[in-house]
Length: 299
Image (cartoon, rainbow, N blue to C red; front, side, top):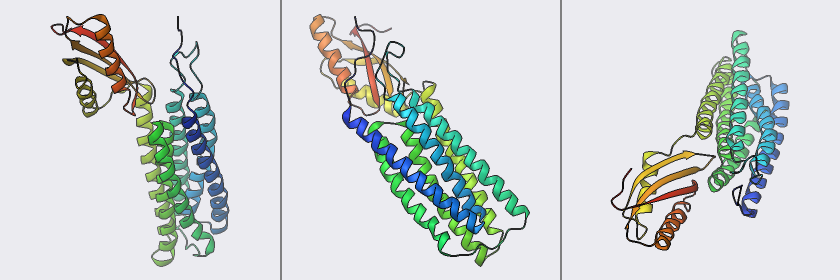
């Protein structure tokens, strides 16, 4: 008797996770250290906010490594379906890190605003903000593609954070320019805008990851797509029951199909297997469970 879910080694999957970890951790350490130096030299609230965000990125990168390692472990007796639910847990940790960075950015901007602001020298160090935005834009593109292939909520949250960093770095740079060309208070105001954007991204990421942990269903459009795919299998008369939930970062489907009641057990079993195979071809579907009933049966 089998007590745990049967799995096969996923070399390509492990390679993609490893690449994502190296890109995220290496990029965040480089950017955090360089921005911290620039913030200390320039005294800019906007650059300080961006540096605080990057430092939090390093922290969550380290946590992400541990969380993804746990999520990639094979099923065992204590976790017969696997450890994939560690992924959205790590996603929530990343969300908390983003929220803390937003708080630090808002606090510093408030202090600078209360002091009346000051013009920030536009010199070579501030150009690192533009370089940072370009690096983070590249990280966003790469991590987004990997997250889509793996259907990974952790990497999806990381990609959102990278996009947030692109915009916050650009906002910080604009704040430095505006403090010279418009008014010294433009710099802390840009810091406030950076903080608001970080809070927004943290809320969206947290909402998604909580949905994964609490068994959120697929959308109506997705459910209809699954029903259509199942009913296209020869021998399936109709689908009269369909449920879904995120048992981990991917969907678990439970459906009842009607078939000709005169078919043999072997024929019915073949139809059921074909439905399962077709549904599990969807990238967002982890496993499908099919209950077969005769054509005149509906519960």
